Amino acid sequence: MIAKSLRRASLLTTAALLTVSLVGAASAQSIRFWTTEEQPDRLAKQQQLAEDFKAETGISVEVIPVSENELGQRATAAFAANDLPDVIYHTLQYAMPWAEAGILDIDANTEVVEDLGADTFAPGALAMAEMDGDHVAVPVDGWTQLIVYRKDLFEANGLEPPTTYAAIEAAIAALHNPPEMYGFVAATKVDENFMSQVLEHVFLANGLSPVNEGGIAAMDEGKLIETLDFYKAIVDASPEGELYWKQSRELYFAGKAAMIIWSPFILDELAGLRDAAPPTINDDPTSAELANKTGVVASFAGPSNPDGAAWADIRYFGVTTDADTDSAMAFIEYSMDAGYTQTLSIAPEGKFPVRRGDASDAERFVKAWSELPVGVDRKAPLSDLYEASVVNTIVSGLETANRWGVKEAQLSAASKIINSQVINRIVRQYIDGEVTAEAAAAAINEEIAKVQ
Image (cartoon, helix red, strand yellow):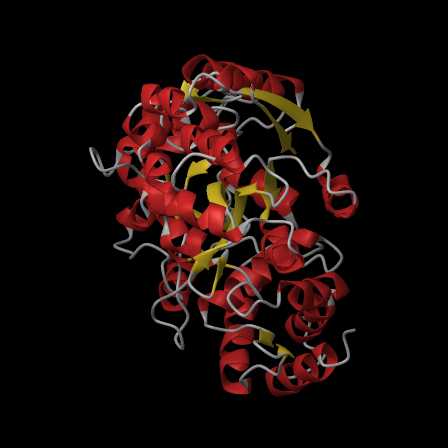
């Protein structure tokens, strides 16, 4: 084991220092890295990253693809057999449970964050994997759900960007003119996970969560009614029918929606870079016209939560308790520093930099990421497609990133509520006029209490 002081001088100062600190033994060292990025092109980029790391340090990295739906079971089995890999790339849902189970080396992961500089990470991404002041895993990348809106129409009508419930409702009042233009396309299909994601974002924006530190808990009925009324307003400005991500994208791409909620994976499609999902606002499916007319908002606020919130999906690196700790830490530091742009290039349209920069340049990685090519059938960097303010908004959503149950260490309880779809069902009853807002709020609290 190298001394802690040498760890801190590792790859952040120079790869040569790390090589010297390993006193010639590095060439014989090898670590195992599990990754859920198992698509062939993404695996190839991770293999190249591993090779570049070996060239710098002499440490070999075996890149092992693991299907995301098998990750939990395989990690549990490997832990029982004392055969965990050295580093795991994993989703948010495993961070706290694995830390509590002893799968993740909390001290090592905390030290990596401190080595890299906690102040260089998006606070929201760090907070999601924080326990008693320690970092149970190292944030790598993520994406924030976005309100995608017609910036040109907002500007032409003197409207404020849709950063609050009130601003969204004001925009609907000004722009809703069906069937030529719908003010919004909200999710209404109860059995679609898309509706669950959108509702969670809307609830978070108004400071609502169905869990607290003790588990499932009733939500404030006054805030619930505010939230329900807002959701009804955006549904009333939507077309009729069972709506989910498909109709949202189709109507926005056709120039018939002023606002939708979507993931950032829509950004390359908006710019005409994917033949399977072309914009139809004009006769040219490769046109960037719609991208040029589009603005995005990541964090928005309800009347009872002026600070607002963003809904985010964050991925993490975790040094495990069976790891060759120093080599595992060195690999993560390399992947998050000298090799970070390469890490993000695996899929830049869905891998936003949770580490904005370093001591030399606070925006170093954001700049580099914005210049990475995105798209499927055609490629172009986001910085060529969207204004700098749009790129910055996309990344800044990670500052206030949140999810139900994360801060309360009750992600499992929150997941059970989401999977039950009970909130979706009652919200749909309210927007269909079957119950009052007051009855719906009471029913939500009553039904979530029954979730096991």
